[in-house]
Length: 317
Image 1 (cartoon, helix red, strand yellow):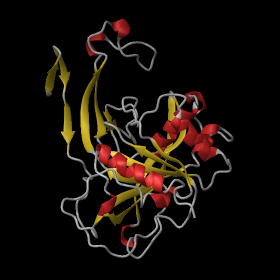
Image 2 (cartoon, one colour):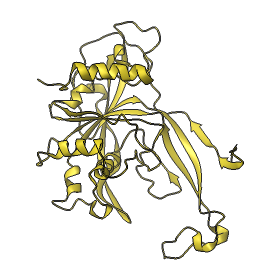
Image 3 (cartoon, one colour):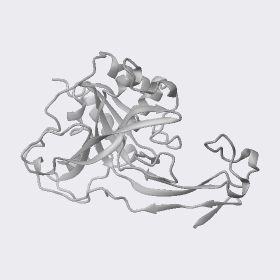
Image 4 (tube, helix red, strand yellow):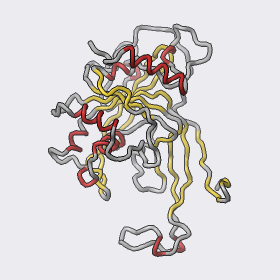
């Protein structure tokens, strides 16, 4: 096991792994106009998930190897909004009429601005303590002191950025989207990106109300640098995922497919009894103008500010 010295303490090192979805720097000549992502035009709002670390577990729960998928999950996003609204764990069920059940009507379309780099943290819990302070067991006792240490490998996405369009086409609650957007700007409880050690960046709610946030994903500046020496007419390939099918157009139909089945549809997220259902996850790619690449840091913030000020109402008809 690799270790590092920090302030006289020996800490396990974090091992970087190559991202499974590196940023595409391929430049394509301009083809037909970019087709729509969906056939619907539903109102909603726009989020951006960034920060040093994110971790969107899908199947590991409390296992020793805690995974992350390559993009935010439905369970993670709904849980974050529930936290913003102040929904207690005990009420995080899809019982008819519950506030949490209303959140399951939300739909998420996710644009991968930067997929980030995968990291694995070798993590230990409960070692070096007397038995009365070791990790509790399922039977209500404590682990023996000579076997108290729990080893885990925790997977993260480092320096990833995702822009998310949130809609609610099937909701029967008129204020649902407004309530969610307002809660995310002033959350009741702290927010996190999959794990409590992964807070979001201050730039969370990009637009609290948009007439068509899904279409705006095709126009909003990308949080990535432009390819070197690109021509004005060049394009970059951008990856999108969603929980509903994308529109099929002549230039995108070959890539329109349910790429996987994810176990991230929340049914119950109470403290000791978490239940999820499986659901199809859809993916597609679009060639967007390379001029949308806003770069890093203040360059990106300037590009984003210009876009939001030039179109204060989003994609208003």
